[in-house]
Picture 1 (cartoon, helix red, strand yellow):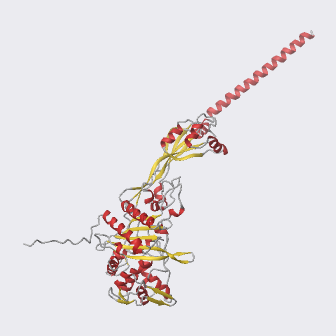
Picture 2 (cartoon, helix red, strand yellow):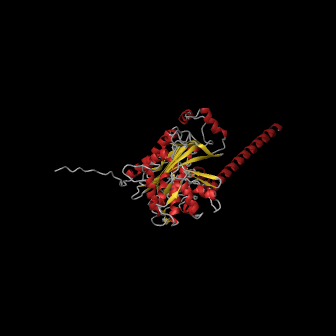
Length: 569
């Protein structure tokens, strides 16, 4: 009986445990069913949004940067489509069989590549290679490595290379302007990026475009006043003279005197903006607007103009320069030799120092500085170029006799090549000053700074500088009448003027009969026996002026006389 009861109790216990298991399983089934119904009916929208958040992304559409062209539409800066390769370390398959192929394509050792990716596994974005060709990117993408992605973007390319590098500048790897026009007009050029919705798979690859949220707005094009043909020609001539004389640097500026537009602006040394792997900072400066020098004798025409404006002088007024030296307080002014009595034209022709000093000390103390200031010296020009310097035009009081004297022949002030070229515009326009511009068709109104006739008078005086008695016979241009002024100044060093180092300058206007161009050539520290402005800079002016006038189809105004023979009858 006891054995039977034990059997019944055992069966009852087993039955109870079985029903408990069934009850637990039923409860689990009910809980799962309830949760599924809850997820489907109550949390469906939340889960859908969470799923989309993990697969749908907002991607930026790169904007096409605006073109930079010359005045004739020739491209100076263009944007070419490229791609960038990046990796998401979270999804990167470190055991993928194509990793060695990826390493070979990227030219990165396999261990180094994996080391970079493993260095910070929590990162979700890391560039592997920037700005590669679309074909190269497609090859990488065809490897099918999870976590390796491709983004489309643009790379800036500069067709003219080093010839226009100092004007155009360049962008960084992200397409932002860093120098030159690229920096000055960054907001206009960069455009506005677009946005689009895309779907990505679990390893981050884009598998479907859903919709565009905002179209990319391309940047505005910028058309410069530069004439690329003239720019190439001027660059070639400047580079040749810098190499021939082993000079430290040099600049050439060519202006259209009728509009104030910059037709060419070149410098040496230069650099290739398409390959900046060996870029040196000294080569990046646009020396035509950043480097200062004392203009020397090239400002003597302005001293003559100021004297004519007093009404007490005429071009044939005689000034005594004997004995070739002049004492001004504790300073001595010297001429190259004793020129005796010179009229105002002769002062320009012979490049006397004593003559301008006598004129400057005879006129109001502020007349010459005011004329210089009205011609743009001592102030930043209107081109708004990054890094442009204003130069120095010091205030000179009446009692500062020595400073007034040295200013008369170009010492005690400093200018840039662009400022000096701009200051010669009034000599080409009979007294009208025009602000300069690097953008086509943005000429500003001219202002009269000299009485009618004064500019023409000084221009004719400067024409004699190129004549047989002048200091710049090598500046003559066959077929054209040209005018200008030489300058040879000592370089300024840490301890003052360097005795054996010079800057050779020539500033001129062409053609004289109907002026179109103002040109400045500056060669810094030419080596060897030739260092005068008439020997180094004047020949460059001749070649540049002649080449520019032919390229611009400017008619000759000094044709050789044709002798005709009449046969005897």
